[in-house]
Each structure stands twice: as C-alpha cells, then as structure tokens.
Image (tube, rainbow, N blue to C red):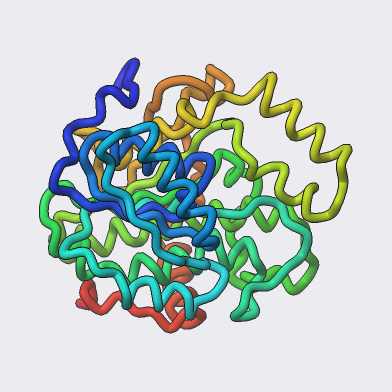
Length: 310
C-alpha cells in the first residue's frame, strides 16, 4: 500500500455504499471518491438540507456521480431504524461508519445515552446490525469500515460506566467511544469468521486531518478563542481531508484488507501520509471486552445480529 492514493481505488461500478456523516469532512470526501469510481452512494446525513448541498457539490466535482440523500440521526435510534427500514437499495456492498462527535460538553442522545458513546458507537452498532442482511448478501468485497481515532489510546471502555455517570470528562469520553469502535470491529470480525461470512469488518483513522470536528465543541459553547486555536491547528499542522480519508478508502477498497485490520497514516509522519496498518491499544483486541461491549450494546439498542447467531 506504499504511496497509495485515491487514484488507486479500483472501479466501483455496480456497487452501493452507505456513508454516514457524508455532508462534510472525511465523510464527504469518502462519498465523493467512491462515487467518482462508479459506486452508487447513499449519504446518511442528520440534516437533509446539508446532505442535499453535499450531493450537489459531489455532482459538480464528479460529473456523472450517482448519489442519494437519506435522513439519519445517529443520536436517535428511531432515526437509525427508520433509515434502515427505508433503505431501498437492492444491494449494499460498503457501509462506512464515519459520522461522529468529539469532546462535546455533556449531552445526552434522544435515548438518554452519553452523546459521544451514543453517536460514535451505539448508533453505528445499531445501524450495522440492521443493515447486516444486505451486507451479507452482497458477496465478496463487501465491507464494514468504522472510523476510529488514534486518540482511542487515551482511554479504554469502562463496562461499569458506559455513559460516564460517575463523572464526565469530555476527552476521556471521546477516547472511550473510539476504543469502542475498535472493540466493535474486533468482535464483529470474530463473529464473521465463525459464521464463515465473506463480509469483512475493518477500521481506520485519519491521523490529524483538517475537518470541523474539533471546532464543533468550542463553537457550541461560544468559546471563540478555543475555536480559533483549533482553526490554527487545522491550517498549519493538519493534513487535508483528502489525505485523511485515504485510510478509510483503503479499508473500504484496498486489495489486501483482512478481518479486524486498522489503517491510518504512519506514526513517524506525525499521523500524515499514505495509509499503513496502524498501531492500536492492546485492549481493543480483547476478546472478553469485545463480547462484553457487544452484549451491552445489544441490550442498550435492542438490535441483535440475528444473521450471525450461532
């Protein structure tokens, strides 16, 4: 994968992808590049207006692109269920679990979960489970790619306090949610192996990419100085969204992606550059932790992966 760029994405004609949070940042670039290679792409967006604007931009930047917009609010399990119920595609080859929130002041989802855990993990756990039958039907090359972060290394999942009711620390909550993404990928990969499924579960992280994710919390709180600080970091230290998206695109389309792979830019490049297999915290490969988080996620969301039931 040395020197791999978006121009190396194989032809995606005849394939369908769902990309969450596709109206901006990494999700937008991921959707655009898959559409540019011929995939039909469904943009799962909380705001239909911003989704429509993104679809228009993709059409302008990638003439002939086939993109559709569908409402999807990962902070509301009713919305997740509605999206899955109304999905009209006759197939689904790629699910890119990209949408996320970072270091927000304490908030809860519509279902009462801590917002970062609820959106970053539980919403995508439920969505993947509800769309799983279509993914399993797609055959070879079908993949679930979940976007984590190198900041997962700052905190493991605490099964006794998934919603951080014992004291909320925004960056710890973010790190735990990103560790949950990797534990979910690990356990899903294990279950797919056991079932003999051809669907592959992998994960990726963008390194330090210039998106609006880091400035969302300061903007929400009206802290202009913090917002400006994040903008300076994006301008002078971060890589572009196009570069940050490469590990996601590689996980989705690369030729040698295996179950439970995790891709990101090289650590020695300060999280910049072409995708490589990335280091990850040892706890994100814990079998017992993965099973425990899975059981809790089923209980909290009410979604069971019956297609993989033994």
